[in-house]
Length: 429
Ligand SMILES: *Cc1c(COP(=O)(O)O)cnc(C)c1O
Image (cartoon, rainbow, N blue to C red; front, side, top):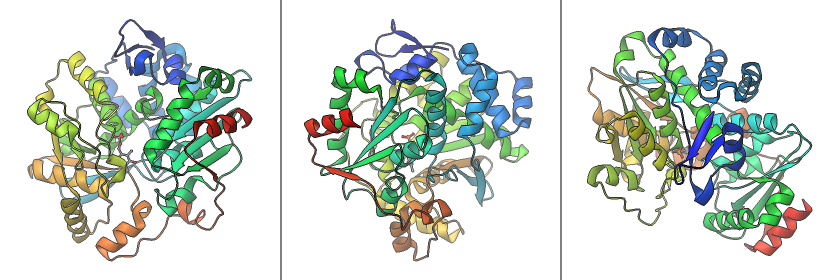
C-alpha cells in the first residue's frame, strides 16, 4: 500500500511507514494512493462472510501484499476479539448501530486494537516502542487496553487531573504492567502540548522510539471501515437500497472511514455529519467558509473539537471520487436539544447517551418514513452514568468491564505541566 502526504504530495510512504510515523512532513496526513473498488458480485460474497473473514478481505484490498493475508487475518482476529457491532431498532425505519461493546465501551476499541496489533506485527526486532499519548478520556482507555501486556511496547498516557470522569480514570489508570499513566495539573491542552514537545525532541524521540497512536493514524481509520460493512450485512434486505448513516463527529475519523467504505463500493446512499455546538464543518458546508471558533465544552465532550484533524481527508476523498460535497448531509445540535433528544429516545424505550443522541436527532429530522437510517452509537451510556441518570432519572448499571475496575486503586503518577520533568520520566521509563 502506498500513501501520500496531503500537504506535500511528493512524500510517499508504505503502509508500515504511515503506521509508524503517524503524520508526514509538516504535520500532513497520509492518504491512500490507490482507492480499491469491489464489484457487485464481490460485494455479495463479502456480505455473506463473517466479520473476521470479511474484514480481512476488505483491509487486504487496501494494504495489499505488504502484509501477507494470513498474518493480516491474525492481527484482525486478535484486534476484533470482542463482541462486534449490534443493531438496535428504535423506530420502524431507524436503528442504532452500537459500536460500544468492546473492552473500553467505545468505538475507539476497533481502531486502537487494530493499530496495536499492526505495530506489534511490524516491530519484529528487539526495539522497544514507547506509545506516548494525551487523552481527554476515551482514547486513553482504548489505547491502554489495546497495548496492555504487549511485549516490547510501553505506553505512557497523560491526562488532565480531575477533568475526566472518575469511571474513565478507573478504566485505564488501574492496569499497571506496561501501562503508565500521569495525571497532569492542567488542562487537556497542557497535556497535548507536553506530548508535542516530546515529539519535537529528536534525541528523546530516537532514544525511546516514540509513537503517538493518535486518531489520525491510518491503521485506526482502516479498521473502522469494517463495521460499516457489518452494519450493511445486518440491516433488513428491503432497506439496503436506501440507507442513510448519521455519524456523531469530533475529529471526523469515523465519518472518513464510512466514506472510504462507500468509495470501495458499499452502496450507502448518504451520510450525515452530525456535530454538537462545535460546528465548524456544518458552517463550512453551509457557507463555504472555514472559520473555526473557540472550542466550547458540551455534554458530548468527545466531540468538543473545533479544528477536526481528519477533515482534509474527507475533502480529498470527495475530490478523488468526483463526488459533490454539497450532497453530504450535516447539522449541529446544542446541549439543550441533546437533552430533549435523550428524553425522546427514552420514551421510545432506548436509553442512549449524548453523542449518539445528536446523530439520532439529525437523522430523524432529515430522512423520510420511506427510507432507512442508522445512527452510530459511539459509546456505552454507562460511561456517562452521572449525566444520564440525572437527565433520565433511570438507574444505569455498569457493564462488567467497568464494574471490575471500579474499586481498584489508581496507579497514576502525578506531575506539574513541566516538560523537563516529563523528559526525565520518559528517559528513565
Ligand atoms: C471519539 C468519539 C467521537 C468522535 O469520533 P471522530 O472519529 O473523532 O469523529 C464521537 N463519540 C464518542 C463517544 C467518541 O469517543
